[in-house]
Length: 161
Ligand code: RP5
Image (cartoon, rainbow, N blue to C red; front, side):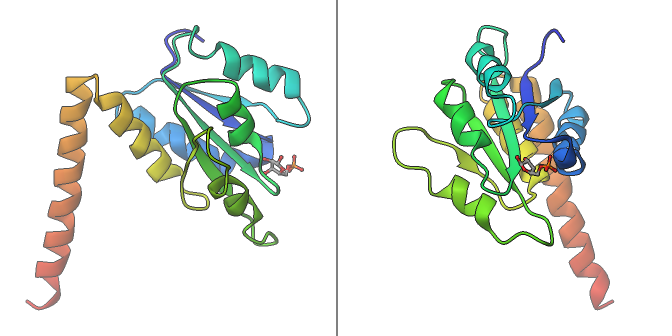
């Protein structure tokens, strides 16, 4: 796919229900993205090749999501100097291993770890980063934030009428 700004990587297709939430929000802002299943341990060559060539392919940042002993985001970050945002995928039968695997990365290779299953915040952080060099996107994001605040104020006002 051409003109992809954000690469959305997941360790397994079983992560899709969470990871497609990133694409949905990015679409709302007109940010182009692609969803890829690329496992750090099951398809290591393809995974590291994608991360290593992402910058040359015009990708601006990567969102990586995985569950279990999740090392996808760390491996991806080791193979690119693009910003990497991690989503620890948590299922009901999991503990918090994916979150800990990502939030405790040793110094030197940064990964921006979101809340568990935090696809919306991952997409919004991606928008904030891209908006640094895109005034039109920055304006859309300001409008989103203003609308969000207005909704809370409206909800507050509606309670004690
Ligand atoms: C991880 O293991 C994937 O990211 C997924 O969250 C988890 C389970 O994968 P499947 O066994 O469902 O393919 O690598």
